[in-house]
Image (cartoon, rainbow, N blue to C red; front, side, top):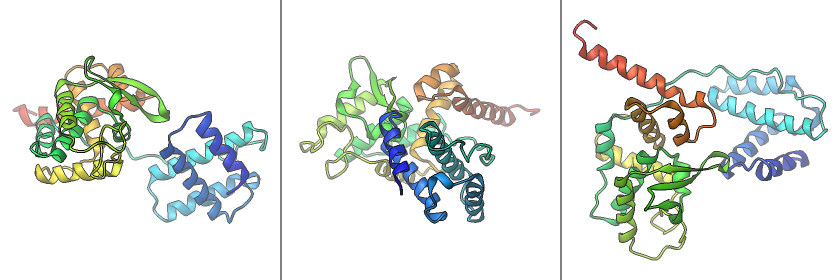
Length: 289
């Protein structure tokens, strides 16, 4: 790309401490913009260029959420150039993000979560690992990226707490239940070979740190085994975790802390889920609903 983008990436990595995954998305977004504009000088890009690119994305039916992310990338990039004195104004200022369709997160009820968690075969080393992964995801509500980034030393079996590194590499302590801790112990005791990556908690068949995709694949596998009809992702267990806590009376602030949300408004989506769930129960159970 150009020297301005490389300075921006250095700023993101060192000063903003963004994750490698986020940094990669920024690179891709900026590369696609410059390709569309035929490598136009970053300092000569104006609001019309940005609008033309957004129109091109819309014509190709790119998802609104993806467009909004890209626009956020460009807004941050040009804001950086203004801050550094390279530009007088941000060409993305005044360009509105697409209005997002409000979709409630999918979650499983308690019984279906239990069915999913109990699907792995505990007689095999792989089954013990997968059971520990499912237990940990539901017990803590952590993101899959946080789970695969866990190291053995970050799980405190005595205090029942896990040290998690979330978005922006922000660290937080999350409680983990006895069942999940027991499942992790069982997995570690049966691990048949020395670990090539001794720090990683969850390993793949090659004894390397498990990836996000690996977790997605194993959850899809156990959804089939458990004969569940829902479209479930690793995030579904996170959604279920938050929804079940609120159903049982947990306050929104506490759930926000447990999930590692920077803003309470992000957590509030789960209040909509619990309201819809209550309405569904009412409509099914009340004779005059």
